[in-house]
Structure formats: structure tokens, C-alpha cells
Image 1: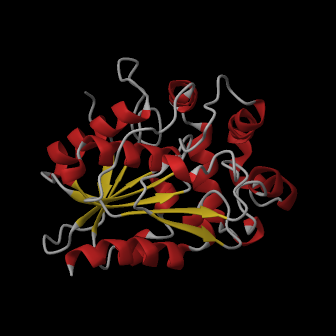
Image 2 (image 1 turned 30 degrees about the horizontal axis):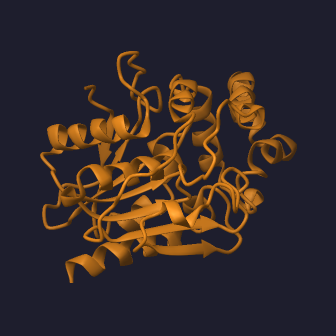
Length: 268
């Protein structure tokens, strides 16, 4: 099992650990908007999945969500000596989080799924060209990324389907995400490992779960990719207004508060 690249915001042992898992073609940098707020109450640990961010692609590492969850458990314990923690994941990271809660529920203190993947009745059998478009665009524009993101037309092409508030996204969010996508050697391996699969494991009631989607999620749209019957039966299910597929970009303070509220309920 490979060790994944990680970051930790602080080492105050009085604070519980919170692990954040990014989505397909993304990186730990996707959580920058919420980390300052979360760091007031947690030791925030982020991971880069194989072939994403600072973690190289290892051809021997299985890339399905369950295997990635096992790799995260091992990395967090080996690197920080942390066995149990709160957990939040976006998109593919949300699916991985659910698998982790099903695999080792005694180690997950709480779980917040931010537009989690895997909640579809009909698993995809092949790659969707519309989804690959953002990857190829990022690859093509890689040499011009700094200039391109200052051009409204290019920013609209890259982000209008991801966020209804794309015009308000900071340059840093756009740059980090475009850079991550353009360098994500694990993009297609992780995508292919999802084909034909969905989340269908059991998460016991001992793990408090919140799942939320934006009302304008074009990546995992309602209803086909937001099937409540596949989510843990005891979960709290939220829909956020004026929100796309990356809720931590569109409403960072609200999302940080939801994660914090779910986690702090456990400690009180």
C-alpha cells in the first residue's frame, strides 16, 4: 500500500482530527476556502489521491474507492499516528469517505459527504465525453493558465458548469483547480476504477452522517446521481441553494459550519 502526500494545519492534540478528501482531477488545495475556519476546532489533515496533487501515480495501487479508502486509513495512521477521525469528502472523495465508514466504522467519528459520487442507480459503463472535456481543456491551456484565468470567456468555459457563482470564484480557487486538473495523471485510472460500480455498502448508525448536494450540481445532477436509497438510512440529507458541485467554493462558511456542527455534536 502506498503512502499518500498529506498536509496538516496544526498539531494541537486537544483538537480532534478532521480528514478532507478531494474529488476526481482535483487536489487537497480544493479545500483552501474552508481550512482556516475548520482549523479553529480541528487538526485538519488533507490527502492527495494517487496521481493527484503531490502524490505520484503508482501503477500497482488499485484506484477503486474502497482501495483508496484503505490507503487513506494507512497513510493517516502511519504519518500522524491518528486512528480515528472526523471525515469530509467532495465528489469521489465523498464516495471514498462512505466506503471508509463502511469498512471501519469504529474509526470514523463523523462523516460529511459534499456532493458524493457513487449514489447512482445505474453505474456508468464508459467514460462520458462531457466529463473528459474539462480534463482536456486543462491540459491544452496548461501553458497559458495564469493568463487564461484572467479572461472571463475562458473562466466561464471552465467553471460555469461547476458553480452557479463562477464569476465570484477567486483567482486562487480557479488557478489551483485548473493546475490540479492539468497535472492529474490519476484522472483516468480513478475514473475507470469507478465504472460499473456504485456505493452499496452499509454504514452503521454509530457513524453520524450528513450528505449535501447543491441545487445546481451539473456534475452529479438530481435525480440520477443523487439516489437517497443508496445513502445511509440514518443520514441527514441537505440541499444547498445557489450551489454547484464544489460546495466548499460556493458557500465556504456554511459548509465549514455544517462539518463543524456535525462533528462537535459528537464531542458534547
